[in-house]
Image (cartoon, rainbow, N blue to C red; front, side):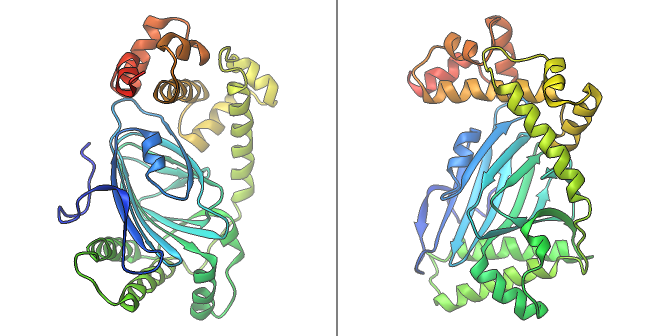
Length: 334
């Protein structure tokens, strides 16, 4: 999938471009690897696993203004993203385009749903051909605006991570204003404007995101969602505890105290795939990461991650990433 970007006026750039406002910058970085995709998001701790097969293409477009970052993120392959966007940060996000539902902290995300909450425990599974719009806001900016709009402090459910339906007709308005604001701000270096005008754009966009929230937000389902996520996390820990000798699914079930059926259902709910497929994808991602970062041979990296049949491993690797492991190694110059 060609990575969609903003109009050609804004040339994709991998580095921050300063804007004439203290602490403000923008970047538009095309990516061809999930680790590169993570690294293109400055100041955030992000980790991605590529879950579906084929060569990866992505785009990360950020505009940082005082107290708020405006984001568009595009990816061609299904991904599992976990991360920390910083203490005191709150995120508001929505799909722009998708080939299927995303899963946000164990909750399915419909086409016009909002992903909302604290930014320090991000967990997001996205399908192939996925585009995301988001704003990440500092508490110092969000809290007074929230109190001004609603006459009360930040709602307690903002301290969780949940999915809520957007108000009718609000989703389209948010998407349109978000893309328009990105376009204006990314072109600001070429067409300077007073800093106060940029802050007005920032505040107008943030208000549009907040006003898209439904009148009532329910967090009643979160305890059950959290239990499923904790089971999946424990199972993943067990599956990766011995990378060169992965346990069988039966052994994992015994270690976490769950039946095979329950574990399969929880993985489908939380990660959208089976335990076996998820473990295989994570191990292949681990090999690719090692080949890109360390001076090791293909055989050493494969065996470190529990692949001992090199012919089958090479076929699986090519199906997952669109190239042989030897090609990954050559591109890194090892």
